[in-house]
Length: 308
Image (cartoon, rainbow, N blue to C red):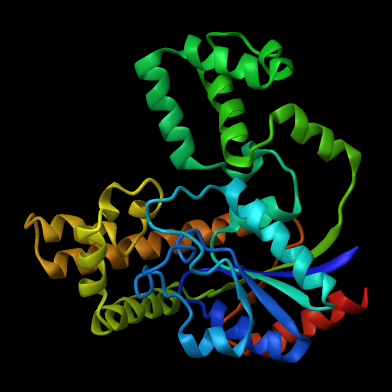
């Protein structure tokens, strides 16, 4: 199978800089597995690679969409699959890099969303639909999309109906199709999952706080206000980005800048916890502590993976 490296981990762990170093070492190219760096003009708040970093190693799925466009896990898989094929066809090593663990796992594995934790935003939207339209309307949608799964559940089983539709909306595949792939055993790529993290919680928290302060010093408030005036708050996907949505109430005069800043820090720390938890659920994922020499450790892991 073709080799690939997934370099994930916590916000503020240094994934981008490490991935660039690894690309130089192994002749690699980076596929961004970040749900927000895909959007144009969302630069500072997403910690998007700088112009110098983008020039240092080829990047894919950066600045691919306008903020008004939706972007789902299924969209990522479609675009990233093309990038994978392109990179490997030229004899390069793909590094799938970013903190959105669901993206990288879906790219290489058809799997059960019940094992991964799924997509909370999609589940929330489906729950709201069930309350407004009734579970019967959602069951009819499931019958049309996946009659086999519909036959396995009762029409009034809200949780099961929502779960099946969640899988369909997130992946673009029905649960029946996903099970068929899982049972086929067919895999084209052999990915090595690496998660950058810190055993010292205060270390990662301090790095997150410092990064937020640097963002504001670099003009985050100005960037976010410009995007807010362009309609970011009502954007279907981009409007949920941490680092931007916390500033919307500030722009409306509902609280001060310091409160917005502290909220960004707190939500970023909470997100870092969820990232670590997600990667722990991936079988075979290797955790590398950033407190040591992560480059040396990861380089050794990549060499061993390529030699297998």
